[in-house]
Amino acid sequence: MSIFKPIESYRRRQGYQLVAGLDEVGRGAWAGPLVAAALILKPYVKLPDLRDSKQVTPLARARWAKRIISRAISFSYGLVSEKEIDKVGISEANNLAFRRAVSGLKPQPDYVLADYFSVENCFCPIEGVRDGDKCVRVIAAASIIAKVYRDAILIKADRRFPGYSFAEHKGYGTAAHRRVIKKLGLSPYHRKSFHCL
Image 1 (spheres, rainbow, N blue to C red):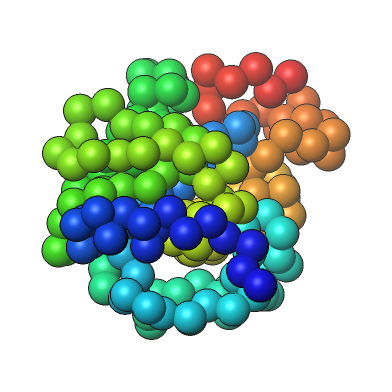
Image 2 (image 1 turned 180 degrees about the vertical axis):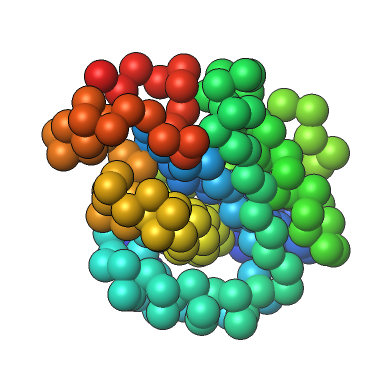
C-alpha cells in the first residue's frame, strides 16, 4: 500500500497534465546555498519504496536520485547563494529558489505541488502541501534530488575549506561546527546573517 496521497493524480484528473513537485533543502543551514528542486515525473511512473530525503541514507538517496531523474519529463534546480540569503532574508530566498526551480522546467508545468510553502508571483498555480515531502510522491522525489544536489555542493566546499568538515554536517548547525567557527572564523560559504555562535 502506498504511503502517498493521490493529490498528483487528482490534479491530473482536473485537467492539469504537467504536475510538478517542488521542495527545498538547506533552509536552516548555517552555510551553503538554499537549493530548490522542481520535477515533473512521467505519468504512471512507479517508484515503489520512495521516501522523503530525510528518511533514507546518503547512499540510498544517490541511487534514488538517478532513478528519479531517469523517470522525469523535466527537472530543474533553483539556487540562492549565501550572499543572496544575507541580502534578502531566508523567506524571500525560499521564494526565489522556488521560482528559479519552477521557471527552469522545460516544458513548463501547469500546476505545482510544493512542500508546505506556496510561492509568490509564479506563472502557474502552486499548492503548498503540509508535510508534502512525506505524503506526495512528486514532492518526495523533488526532495531527494534537491538533497543530493546540495550535498554535492557542500562536499566540494569541504575540499576547498577542509577545516570546516562541510562534508560531514552539510552546513547545518552542530556543536562541532560551532567549535570550528569559533576557531577558524566564518568561511565564504557561511551565511553572515545567521547567528552561528
